[in-house]
Length: 203
Image (cartoon, rainbow, N blue to C red; front, side, top):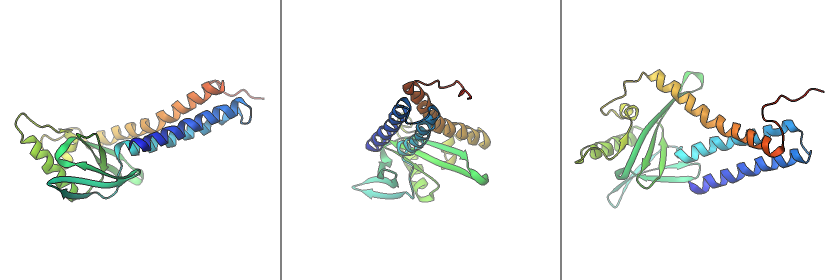
């Protein structure tokens, strides 16, 4: 995960610096800061997917008594330990053509993260892991949002309407994609010595 983020970050910075240098040397016009902006948009999306461990079909296994959940991500197969879960969150957002994206974002005490879609078997193992943690003396050691508990069939459930969760997801996803692009644009303009917000003069 860390290596993947470093590669994305390095590539992002390289494109922004190269774009600014080419503008300063008049190889590119001042309006070509769109290259850096596009790089920020792509890098933001990739970093988002890598950080949360956006995964394919999950696989549950037991190794030496430890229950493990594995799935392939952009940076390879990632495995978290269900008996060492530290947090479970749910992310829901409206998709295209009226569909929705509904994911569980998992984090274990080793700092590993994994995001899975709907998978009945995996959700059953996650639910039992949370129930075992809830049954421990002193209260739950796993931080599970009410929204995630609703998905897992656990109490207490979220009382927030589903549409509110979906609209909130749209804003979160939009910010995750647009802020890196906006940052790239601003930095490229600064390095190239152009105005980030002034309109291009007409000739």
